[in-house]
Image 1 (tube, rainbow, N blue to C red):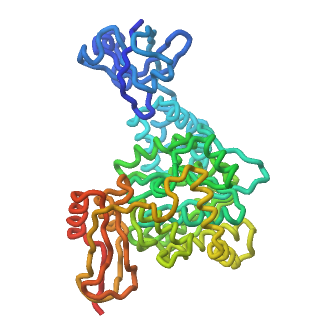
Image 2: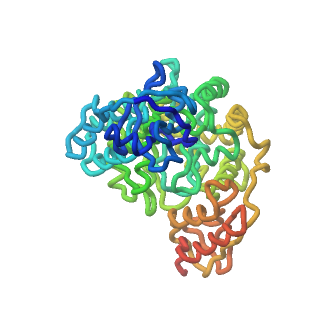
Image 3: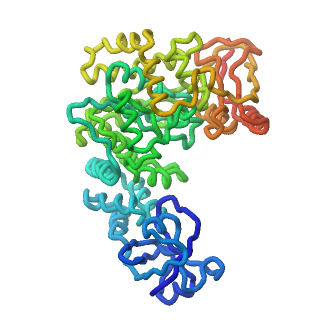
Length: 500
């Protein structure tokens, strides 16, 4: 059938979709989610069908193409195209097999992931794959195959084989946990090559990319990343701006609505990102505590073992540490406040949060010892020396400038101009600060979109406080947001104080 292109002026975010008038669809017995092959001259692509009931949306004899399809075909409104019916991808049968509880082969998993990257699977079809993994679990063979497929279907940073490339990752769930931004310049100051790509926040007040964006540009393409690495040996960028393990982002998007996070996919997701940037040493941090993603030490030990197995299979030397995560790390919660904490710490400013400093030193020390830079027990001494001497602070500025600095000094970091102090309702000792509650209040205040919004903590667990003393300050970029955050604070609190 010959049809005329209509530009729908809509992007799907990845999936290739074309819309037919319902009468044209009926002629070919096509239904939503069926596939057709579209050709414009010698250029062809396979797309998912939708149909329009309105002549105004898509007239008869026309085909509405979304941005991704227009780009594939190099087409524009008015171009003639040919269409044919097309079978559904074979990967859909593989997904059905997983739903039946069958272990998938490496080639079957690769076919699924390639179709995800090529935009041939709908979100519903991909969700069924995630659901199959969630319901039936994944073998270690499947996990490794998934990681390899994610790496193979995206871009890769490749370096001299002799170059020692290190990376680190935190499982997350701890408010204010900007240890990546704190540890990377320390490690890089020791001469290590560390290409760090990070995510934006999904449910937290700030991701590493959101926080680094306060200081510098993070949306670097792969060529820009290579230039930064060549110049300063390290970067802290947003992974979503490059096509490194691109299937991972598509999978995360369908996991989020039901908070599905199968263990095998978690392992594959993290290790694929590390493999795609050429890492040969990876440090994994698993925080444990109430309100974190991993709440028991038993679960953390199991996950540690699985990470080490996955790393071994992928030929990445993987070291896993289990850390305390039952309360926020640092004082600032929110992009600007966390960025300020990091810069204060690197500068040895008296206002620095010492909980962040201690953890950054430990993480850097673990890298130094796992790579043989230092003997066992000597890593913290080197990390402290690099911090105290100002070398780590200088390296951070090298990274910021190489990525396109947004500030000239720490004083340029802008905090929300609307604020309210939260006072202690009684005298006593702080016994618990709930990560989830603090994160919720910060997000209602505007995080992470409003970089200046968030919470600044004045006390941590174990601190004695007096009635009427400041517990924390809520910041927002508008009065309405501040009032909403205050209402949420009154409803959920999040700080437990025991009377003396």
